[in-house]
Image 1 (spheres, one colour):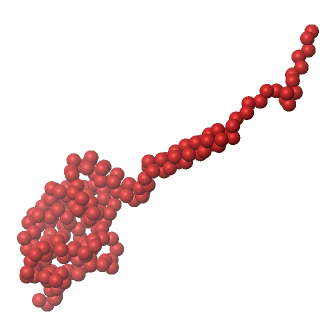
Image 2 (cartoon, one colour):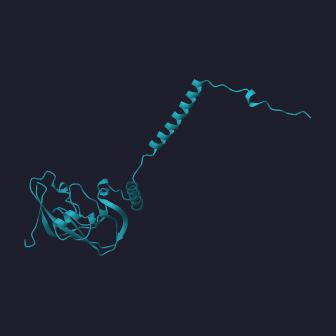
Length: 202
């Protein structure tokens, strides 16, 4: 029976690869790997969890209500969610003398200063190009039936007075909460943006 004896490794034929060819192959492989890593890093920009959650909240709200929520409304809300306000609830707001409807509502404040901070009122919303001061009033509305609305915390507004109280809860609906009733004069908004409250004995 024939005996099979393999050749020593030193006598086996070897394949010789030129040094330059080997270098080119290695460089190409490294470039390919780096390109893949860079592309993977750029393909999915990071979005903070808070921003993503806010986007999901508004998408859910619009899908549930059929409402189209303007950007300025979104900027005024923190942690929005859809709720049903029971009938009989009284809500308050502040505004100029020509306020004819209430899309926003919250609980009553003590005076003009608390409304400015709690509701985060920016003077530029009311002044425009006015040359005379304007009066600001407190308004209220009593819900006659259960009302669907967006409940949220009041977001900080750049032009509003700094808040010293905790976040205030508010309600918003694009269809309106009802026709408001003027309750009392809170004070005046001067042309330079200052607020002048009405004294208690006025």
